[in-house]
Amino acid sequence: MKLRAPAVPLISVDPYFNIWSMSNQLNAEVTRHWSDKPHRITGILDFDGSSYCFMGLSEFTSMKQEKLTIDSLTTQYVFSTDKVELKVQFMTPLLLEDPILCSRPITYVSVLVNAKDGKKHTYSLRFIADDEICLDHKGQWDTQFSYGETDCFTWGKVGSLPQQLLNKSGDDIRIDWGYLYLAAQKQDDINIETTVLPSQDETETKSGRLQISIDFPPSSSNEALFAFAYDDIKSIEYFGEPLDAYWKTDDTPNIMAALHKAFLDYPSIKQRCDKFSDEMYQNAK
Picture 1: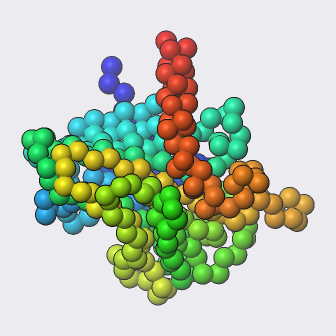
Picture 2: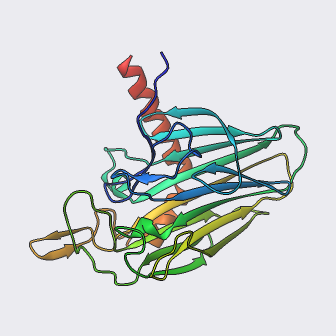
Picture 3: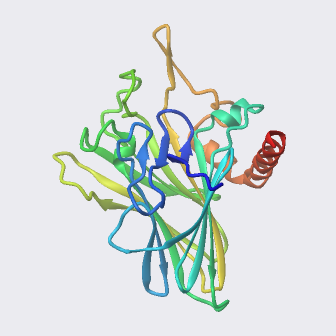
């Protein structure tokens, strides 16, 4: 029996930082918050001078989605053209035995590009996130962007200008404080850039999109690791006192430290997530 998910989880950190694909193909429709409001992330692969869309909607040719696999902690897609194959995996490590890791507001996105002819080619890959991800709705407020790099990763961030922390509660609302981060792990011989693109929508506010791109060296195969993170600054109000998130510890007191640790620990975290998923599947048989 072939199963079809009514919606496919991409980022599933918490009810605010929560993005899904609500179509059969990842590149057939925009990505959305669980409340069905657009939270657009677009993915583009540039291969030998041609651009292909594998995530969201764009003006470029859509890659063919060959496969979709969903398990307890990961979602993996396989895309292809006549010249190249692309594997994209989303992983949110919600391992309940590790509350600090479970509460860390970071989703990994790993990509693997393979040329079908086995020869060297030039290619790059980019993700573009709309600023509506850090707003209740598009055009609600002006947004602000910044970017930089550490010895481990390159990053860009976007957030609303007012930053009214914990200003609302209820159902069918989106977070409009804090900052969305796009980051990519540094590697030898690759170039990473973060830029701000103009908005695709007409709004009365200062609006835009955050892009992070990786240029690979000419080769037949390449892989890269991205992270999508959200720093809500304060996570809950307890008897009138705004409190930090559980993941903020002496080891990771801020989002930059959390991203650094997330990249360094990725191999072991990936192994733990795979082990959990395999055991869960076997126990359910």
